[in-house]
Length: 420
Image 1: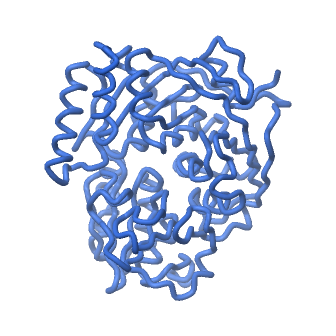
Image 2: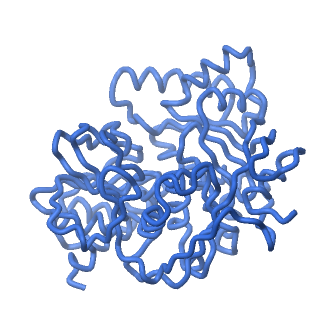
C-alpha cells in the first residue's frame, strides 16, 4: 500500500503493520530532555528499575529553558540533570555550549532525515523540516525510551498542504505557517501529520522550514514533515553525527485531506491573542500599540531570522515606548551575529542581546510581561499568561514584522517601517 511520509518513516522503524490508527512499536533514533523535563524523567528512569541508558550516543539532556539559572530551584534542576547525564555518559550540553534545543540539535547533526526523534518537549516536531518524524512526549515516555530504545506511536492520518506560487521577499516561514493555521484552525490537524508540498517549498530556506515544522503542533499536529530535497540533504550531510537514509512518500499515498494555499498572495501576517490561529495581516491591525518585542526562540532565533531583523533595524532606533530583546537560538547563530555585526546593530538601535536560551518564550525569564502589557514575539504560542501576567497579550510574528513593530511602537508591516 502506498505510504505517506509519516507512514514510511514509522514503517522503517517497526515490524508492525502500518496504517492510520495502527499502534506500532518503534525504535527511536534519538531521545532527549531539557532542564525542566529531565529531572522528572530521571526520577521515572530510577523508579522503573533502569540502570543504564540504551545508547549514550542516542540519548541527551540539553539545559536551555531556565538557563543561565534564574533562581535556586532552576539551579537544582540543572544540577540533577547534569549529574545524571555525566554519570550515564550520554550527550549533554549546557550554558556556553548549547542553545535552544530545537535549534541546536539539528545544527549538531543529532536529528536526520528518515529518523524518529522523541523529545520531552512539544516542539520536537521541528525536525520535520529535515524529513524526520519528531514528536514530543511526556517524561515517563522519555524515561522508558532512555531505558529501552523504543516506544509506541499511533500512526497518524496525514494532511497534505500544497503551497503554490513564490512567496514575496517580505514573507518567511512564520507568515506562511500562521496563515495556514488561520485556514485550518488550531485543531485542524489534531494528531495528524502535516506534509508540505508545492513549488513554494523550493523557495524556502531550511530556517523557514524549521519554523513551519516547529509550529505544526499549533494546528494540533503530531508532526509536520517536509519531503527531503537537495537543500535538506546538503544541510544534513554537512552536519550528520551518524549515517541516515532519507525517506519519501509514495505516489498514490492516501491523504486525509488536501489543503491548497497561494503562498504568493500571503501578506506579512500575525497571530493575535490568544491563539496561534487568530491570523491577520499586520497592516490590518490598526494602531495596536506594544510595550515589548522578543526576537528569538526555537521558532525564529536562527541566523536568517536574526539577519532579517538586523537589516530592518540598521541605522534606526527602537521606539521610545518599546523594549526589544534579541536572543540568538544557539552559539553558532550568536557567533555569526558577532562576526557580521548584527549584534552591534541591535545594541545601537537600543535592544538587549542575551546569551542563547529560551528566555521569555514560556515566561521563564529575560522578558516577563506585566499586567496589561503587549508583546510582539517571534515565538510559537500566545496563550493566556504564556509570557507573564495572565492579563498581558502576545502577538506572534516573524522577525521582519517584529523588527518593524519595535521601530514604530505598534504592530507593523515591515514595508511601512521602511517606506517600501
